[in-house]
Image (cartoon, rainbow, N blue to C red):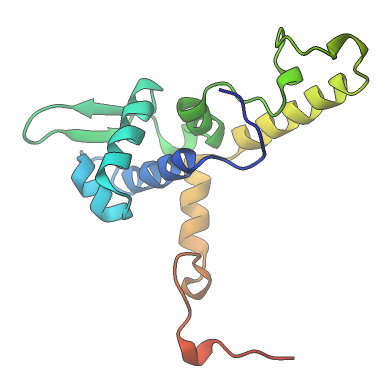
Length: 160
């Protein structure tokens, strides 16, 4: 599946949230229900994400009554690129960034090299951010600016 825009799909977002939850308890096995409760992502979606992450080699699973999931690698070794590829497949922003894509204007296209350059830059950017970086950023973010929280009405003052 190819990227059609610069926006990650929702499952890649959810996968990052699930991996972050797993990274906060690296020695514990967490089951899908616990991860759903912790992340507030619906259990069926967590199950779908975990399946893709397991298939992608980013998490390992253990069966049984005390089974669950944990990271397959240290948070420093898992990149956003790894997450996107596990959920979406190879990263390509445009069809022409993929060799042999069958683009009908490829022979006369003057932008093809530029698109490949842009594609490469985006892939490098995604590969430069690790799960450990995300955890650090999350822990450094002041509570009042956390994107999932809303400020109390008293602190929402408009200044001109």
